[in-house]
Length: 243
Image (cartoon, rainbow, N blue to C red; front, side):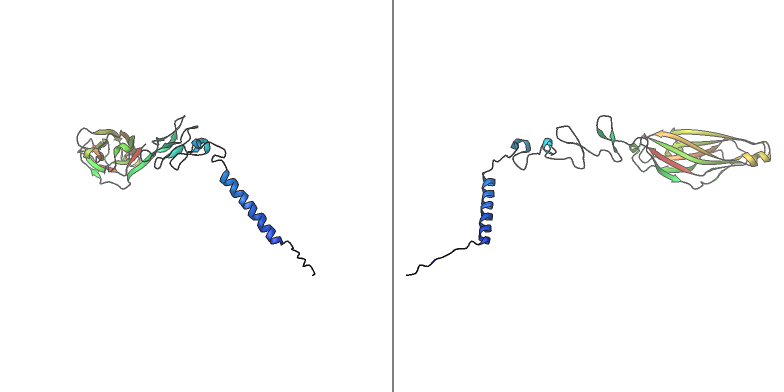
């Protein structure tokens, strides 16, 4: 009887599959059997989802953050969070750290009226020419600047007329005088009147922020001489707030 000889040829695909399976099994075994802390202590980063990641490990060191706060470094300690503070504040250095601070020196135009007022003519009574009712919280600014351009005109020969411009509160009544500006007009001839007696002057005053929230800020005119021809006009009126 003749013997049957069987020859088995290796299949390269089978060999590759077996090698891949062995490698995968080896990797799974190493991952499964690896130590639970492969390089640091769990206490450094926390052992559950509620623990804060330390600064040394690239974290914030905090479990909560102040809403809208600006993060500040704190060496190895948890980040410091600086709240925004008062409306209009800026982040400013005090030489040591950063803080929410008022922007000192910022000037804001709050009100402007660039039209001419009614003309005050031949009257010795103090008269309101322009005013503004404050509609903001005065404490938003450290102080206020009042400013106006005013016109005085004399039409009489040899006139010696004093014009008084007042910045006041509360409709110009009471003792709330902010500033008194006196302007004297002199003229000896018609030519003097034509060349120098029609003047436009800028006047200004400052006040603290101790104003009522609905106070009237008033510009008045008060000529000091009767019996001559003159006009008084407020050509503008502006209010600035200074931080």
